[in-house]
Length: 322
Image 1 (tube, rainbow, N blue to C red):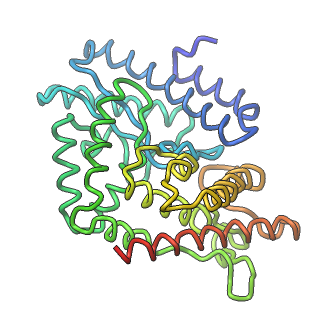
Image 2: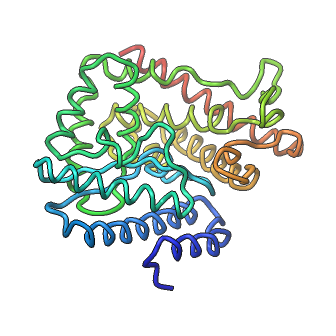
């Protein structure tokens, strides 16, 4: 099938998704292929309207897509960097960003509620403007600026000239010891939701649509993702997936035994969500029905949750001693 329209890509996605969902790696490679197909069609549409791009560019994914940790459903988190600097260049690439975002929505990827998308001027800039933006976020003390830095840290090239992004990621890595940046990043991620109570019980949602379910995103994924991202930033690691970041950490930061331990638990978490998650839609994909789990499955989940809490506490103590 030639994927030369959003409708055809959507049809392809629906037909092939089940076969691609055998494990996290295959699923995320499938997401990448769908995204690249959408970008290719979007670029063709914009070229037909406005002509060829005036400069090289890089379209990059962030969030779970940047980390290759998407579930069956995923929303959009992306940005763009381009080499040229004229106002007309910005207009062109913002148009491309809007076309890509609209195309992804048609295919089945919900738009980001916080507008972290290449259709937003905040996330679509020239190389020079991106460099200035990173400088500003690092020196600004607001919660929002630090949050933006954390989001950008997960950026991964999906299409175009990847070197444009690599230069920015290197610039970001060089900031690790500036103005107590790691401590400020830590404080930005400290409001974590506990998954296991003091009596050893799984803590479930007590009201709303997902009452009785465990929120895997807040209780399980955030402790691992946030902790390992901070360690990777501390060591200047440009990898984006949590598993690859753990592997790349120096033995002085995390022993080989600890790396195996945390990699295994995070891998189990990815598999656990894929098997037990409620994959009705994007929002439901973050939840597991506590009543539907067996005693053994609950035990496994508790071990995953406790390991994540232990890891985050280990990282918190390390950074606060700096």
